[in-house]
Length: 193
Image (cartoon, rainbow, N blue to C red; front, side, top):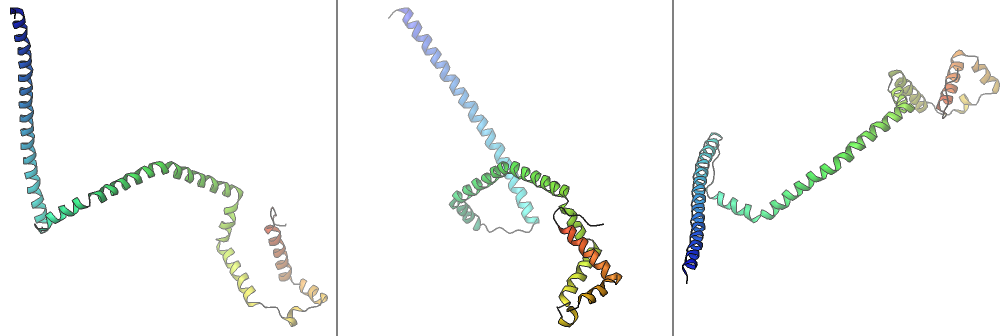
């Protein structure tokens, strides 16, 4: 071998040795960082454990030390169930994200439809039905209908007898009111004058 070849091989070996030393140094740093992390986590875990003991003691909770391993076993046995539960919660969250714009639009449509009904006067009928005088009148009408039966003697009047009753101001007023009521109940009908 020539001296140049030997020098090249020595250079290559030096480069490889530098890479190996650099790798060893990196592993050493990683191990030190891991040791530091483990040390820090163990301090945090000990502190968390102490705090948990204090909280449980103040809450007067007694732990059954034999039950903790059983609880852990149950948790591990049911890990698939917990996974399914988490998937269902995620699906429900996604469903709510998807359905909320639809529900929002349905609410807007309902408000618009209610406004349309109000513009057409449908709610005015309902408002009138809740007035105390209208309720009292409907009560009197339903009571009169329930209590008044067809009677052959009282309701079998001659035409002259009916005309005689029309002379009474109460009968004329009642008939006029009933005719106006029938007129107002017709579609597009208005109260007579």
